[in-house]
Length: 309
Image 1 (cartoon, rainbow, N blue to C red):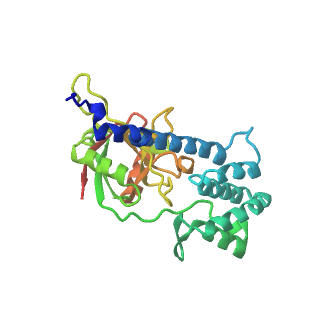
Image 2 (cartoon, rainbow, N blue to C red):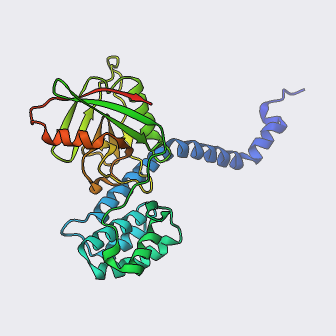
Image 3 (cartoon, rainbow, N blue to C red):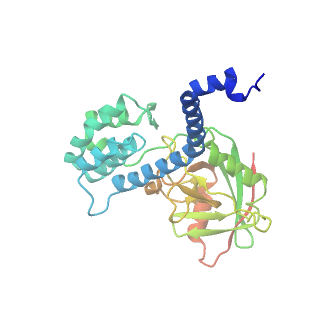
């Protein structure tokens, strides 16, 4: 009786008959694993590419193409198209550019059917595109807001105590935009809980803002530094006076510094879409702002303490 080998078994015959199906299945599984590993990197790269395009299309330089061309380019990216239209409308209203507003009207009409971007208005919350169209229809360009108003924060509140010089202390209370910016606000609360604000220096940036530096995190030798926090761009939040937000890392569009935050002392709408707005000061801004304006340039400013309420 001859010895039976593996080649003589039904399993071997089945494997031979289905070899191509098995190879295809292995290829599909391998492709899925590879896609999952790379998809996060692809998404991050796509986001950075989109917002680099936003910066070029919404805030063009002197050699930029005309508005019609820029709007056509923006339509190709649904992530940035609404924001390019809104910024172009704001600029056209400021300049009283009737020709630009005529180009923007059909864009606003198209966006108003979606109304994903919602803002606070005197009549309540409504879609930004619909609101702008309403103002144009009622009163023309002169009625368009020169700036947009962010909603009031609904998240938890934090208390920050600052000192100017040896004796003057000022307390501000800020409400967090936890619903709109969950990643950034969670990081802020972690920094506060870890005491990274306490007894740290702050730097006055002229009349524009106050940068609050966080205490460094002690890491073991060879350990990686804390990763940058990617920007969140929620609908309807703008860089207005009294906002507390993150700072963009130089040369890394979309990446934010995990070691500092900034309190705005004036409107800086050019930062919209480039850094995350975390909170809005709801108490104590006016006396602090007056004290900073009157302070001697050599005055030492510190964050005495910070806590969640």
